Image (tube, rainbow, N blue to C red; front, side):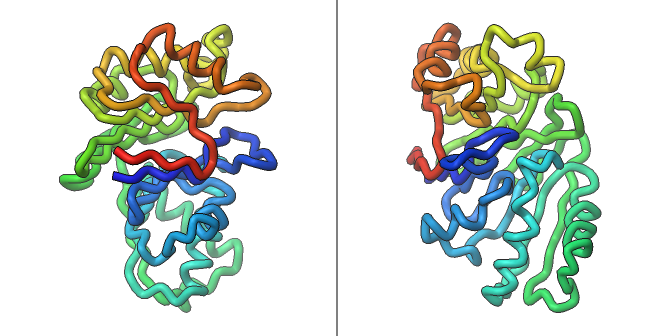
Length: 248
């Protein structure tokens, strides 16, 4: 399995980091933050190879790149249908935004298929989803291929995420605030590196804990994120930057 971290930044993009988006192999996209299309083109991925997009929630840093990606696929004369999976309302949101941007939906060269996740469900044999615990409705995903990957999206610690991520090979988890700001992190539906480390230890992550969604205003050096997670988890810890690739 190949995991490409297209965007790793939280709410604020920087000169080097765009909003959250992660590509699994070449066909499955997790979130579509601002900058996703350019990153895919930088990495020379075929946009038409993407079959499914899993959106965690509707905050702009996780979904704002979706309209531009659909537009670019259309301009490239995509023919294959595209499935978009997300929380309840994903179809209304996507169609409404496209219409507000005057996208001629009748002229799209491919079909859009929508799958809404309400509470938790098995999408199919390869994807499970469960509601996390954020400020708004938000979904965490478990991807099963030759390896198992769990992606938290934005969430404060909760038992549902523990159940979803048990025994996974790779846990991709947000780290929005430092450990010393744990109370604020949880108040706003987010987690710390320490929270991610605790989860990785409790659920028996086998290969790696990957920290994303980390703000540079709090973490000037990757070493500080790793140290805060290492206090609870002694396995492999990775702090992902844009365009990093992990092979499992």
